[in-house]
Image (cartoon, rainbow, N blue to C red; front, side, top):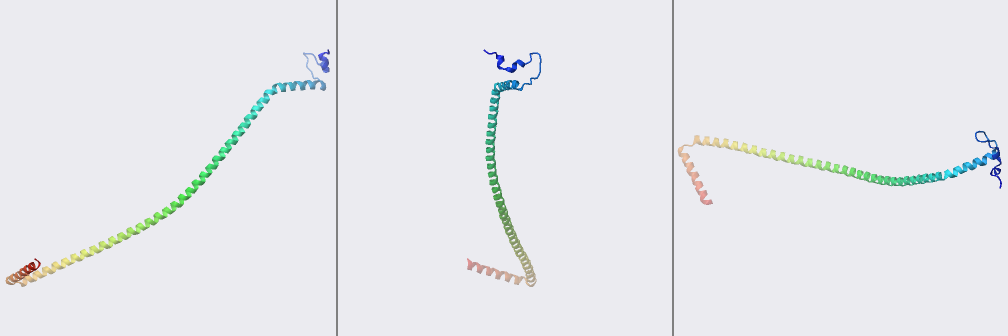
Length: 183
């Protein structure tokens, strides 16, 4: 059997332990270094690939969640826009209705004011008419009282006892005749 050291021709040139130096034989050092590096990478790389796979899965899951959240946010945004359009239309409708209601109330108030003014004018005219009648009646009563007092004064000065008694008797007779006719 061959010696294990024979399979690596450069092993004979290695310095002994305790000394340190550079090996300048590229052909002898590269396969060993590469095999050590590949071994270390394969041994430790299995865990790293699992970590990378886990990280990749988490990133993909985060991306999916973000996309779902984005879709949900877009749906909510569209719903909010639809509600905004609806509210704006309702506000416009209220505004239009409000203006027409204001105009209607304004016209009602103007009409009511005209009716109230007309009623006040009628009351004023009725009051003036009533006061005119009352004043005319008062004037008539005073004229009648003055005429009656003047007539009584004239009668009292012109009448004597005999004429006075004859007038009373005639009046009593007239009242009696009227009583018989009506009675």
